[in-house]
Image (cartoon, rainbow, N blue to C red):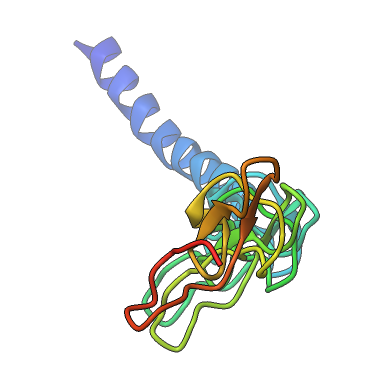
Length: 157
């Protein structure tokens, strides 16, 4: 009976030591300030670890007013692969190349891709600004042409 009491007393003495060690371990994980490099959210005092530039290195960053942790987004003109990479949420082709770039949305918040000007070679109507891609004669390749007629139809000239 006396040994059980001593064991209980020993456990009660060790409990605060274990608690202090746990708190110190947590403080070491979440000690990093804003601007310091990190790998996970729990390393930061702000609980927010994200990329803040094209550099893939993550840094501790402040959370927004709504307690969100937002990553850096690419501004217009940067090369992208997906709409979510861009500040504008618009990633489209903007010239003859197949490369896509971040682009501003229209006044009506549409994300419109670049289209070929009139008289450029084309394969599909959707490639042309005029949305009109036709062969001008039997021997010529398809070209983007302006729509014509009263109803603005895609007709050969």
